[in-house]
Image 1: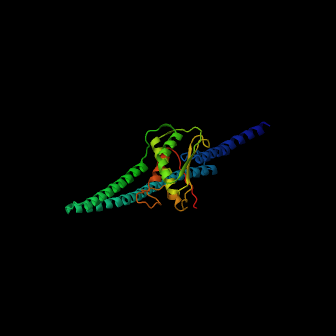
Image 2: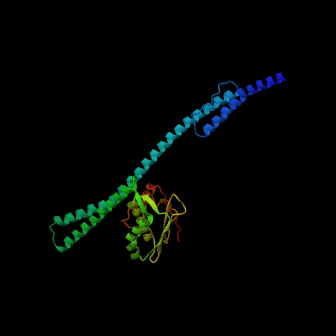
Image 3: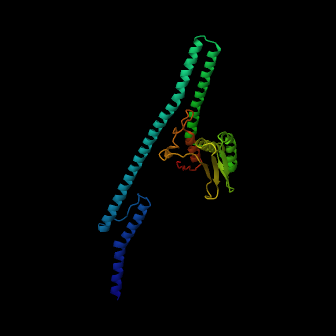
Length: 298
């Protein structure tokens, strides 16, 4: 019985040292790698099958780490390349948007200078020069709007954050835009929630975003239509939700993914810079929010 007990203890100790302990180390190593700890190494130096397996495992994690680092570098280069491409595209669009009004300014300035060089001072000539100056003024303002909106779009930080009730911001924004709605024979309906609407925000920026969205809704709506401004303070305790709803003709599905891109616009007006929704997108992102568009064509 004593010999059997001693033999069993020897076998148990042998099994623990040769098999159980190495397997336990390998099991721990797999969990570490699963947790993305690629620096972990299996401490097994035996020359048996488990030692070979441990060496292969260590080689695998080392190569996996090297591959991951190379992948990270490649991803960084790709991101930089995409940023440069986006910067080039943005620069081209800015140049195009500013070049048009600048060309008009140059043409009307030369025409006015020609009139004045000829010494013409009759009322008709002066009226034409005044008309040219008004065009120059409008085109210069258009250039200024492009630059101003572009700065807002690219601005990385908002202004001063302070506490404010969102319902008050909405009321103020709707008061500013009320006349435009009435001129277009549109009715703006408020459906404001009565939950906790106290938020920390850049009040002016949020107001600018709301006005831009409501103006966009007004321009998309037909006379006699209605625009709904709705809030929800209960669905998500950490966020407030604002919905601007109009009954316009809708946006085509192929256009919808591009509406927040800078300088993208479906409007025909030459005064439109195509930066309105881009600025709104930037303001919402700066406040840690998200903006989602939904549309159905008539």
